[in-house]
Length: 163
Image (cartoon, rainbow, N blue to C red; front, side, top):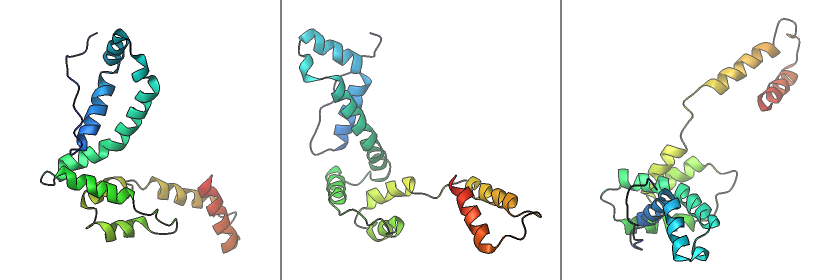
């Protein structure tokens, strides 16, 4: 079939990265795996929906694998599992709360996830949005419209920023 010969990876409950590894391997060898299952005659054991679920979890597990392999070389996998489990059992943060403050307070409790958060919740590295807003303000406040009140000017700027 044109695929390199590879073995399935065994899932080890004490190494949570092995779950990601086995799921990723299944996605990598999906066609040969489906063909083999068809030859065996047991198509009910693995169907297309299962691969969609596996693909979904690969997307979820991949950042954790990257962080755990890059930043926590000395941290046992069991600690990472406990950390992830503890985080997933946390109550949902109130919508009006500041997630960056929460992470700053929780960085000692979730050190590996904190490293991941730094990658995902960072400040955008572009000023395009602010430059676009200033450009629109230049069109709103012109010599012809210099008599607009502050309140009307603020409303026009706000309306232009959301459309």
